[in-house]
Every structure is written in structure tokens, then in C-alpha cells.
Image (cartoon, rainbow, N blue to C red; front, side, top):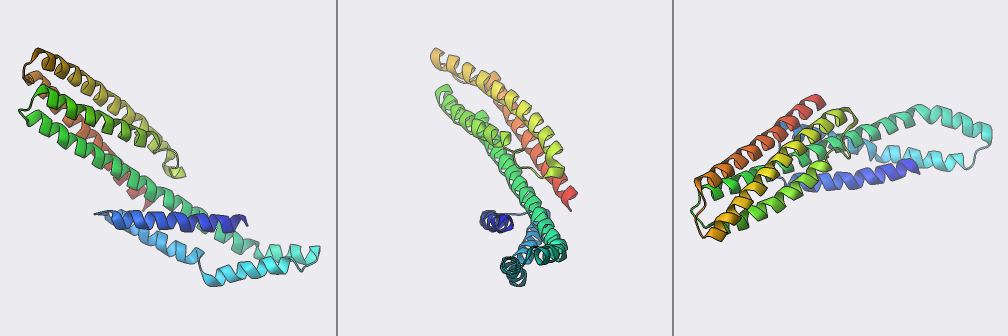
Length: 232
């Protein structure tokens, strides 16, 4: 019964991963290779002959006396152990693919925010407009921070230590970005109240925020590449 539930959970997760990959505009060769491996593993786990053998074993056990049952389980133990190992391997691969997807999402979000920051720094719009856009970026940054906090929740066992370290470093960097963002918004508020234009110092600070976001995004992509290489 436990194995049945695990297989059912795997099928559900596989369908989620399949949809996510289909919606992705681009996949690295490493991710595609992992996905193909995952497809093959799922075919093994969902093998009709294996499922039929499991069902026959369950039915037979109900008709055996204690000694016969013991011998049957001893004969079947090795095959069942292999089956469990396939499930565990598949679960770890699911976690690797999910982590790969999450790192990519964080990197893309940071790059998008960096591009928005660049546009603000190059614009001649009023401090009020700059402030409005910076407030929107701050909300997006909060959402990304929440994503980063969840990175280690279901990381693969062999990657857990690296992911925890990456999570710690990224949270520190994003804290610094948010502090710079808040300082920039305070300056924009003052400029708005005085009726002036956005100062060169404010624009310079926005460019610095942009660079910090780009660097953090690059760190995400580098971490993703390293984890993919370890998996191969």
C-alpha cells in the first residue's frame, strides 16, 4: 500500500514537471538530459508487468499460511528493494528538476527587476513616477525573497548543504538590495516634496541596485550549472 501511494505521488509530480517543462521557453541540455532520464525511470516504475506481479503477490499472500508467506516474501525481497530504489532515485531526480526550475525562476525575476531599474535610472520622469515604480519593484523583490526562503525545503539530499549555503548568501545580498531600494525611495520622496527632479545621485544609486540584482541573478545561474554538473 505504501509503494502504491508513492507511485501515485510520483505520477502526479511527473505530470506537474512535464507541464512546467512544456511551458518553459528554453531548457539547458543538462535539464533535458535529466528529464529524459526521468521519463525512462517513470516507464520502469509504471511497467505493467511489474504492476501485475505486485498485484499477484498481494493476492497470493492472502491465501498462504505463515511459512509459505515468509518464503514468498524472502524470494520477493530483492526485487522489491530494487523497486524501492527506483522510486527513491526518481524522487531525488524530481527534487533536482524542481530545484533547477526554482533557481531559474529566481534568476529571471532578478533580471527582469534589474531591467526595470535600468529603465528608471535612464528616464527623465518625475520623482513621483520613479517612486511609484520603485515601490512596485520592492513588492516583486519581497516575492522573490519568499521563493529563496523555500529553496532548501525539498532540495535533493546530496545538494542540501550547497543549497543552504546559496540560500544564506542570496538572502544576505537581497537584504542589501532592499536596503538600497528603501534609501532610494526615501530620497525620491524628499525630491517629490520639494518639487524638484530626480537627482544624479538618485540615478546613480538606481544603477547600483541594477548591478546588484544582475550579480545575484548570475550567482543563481552559476549555482544551477554547478548542481547540474554534479548530477550528471
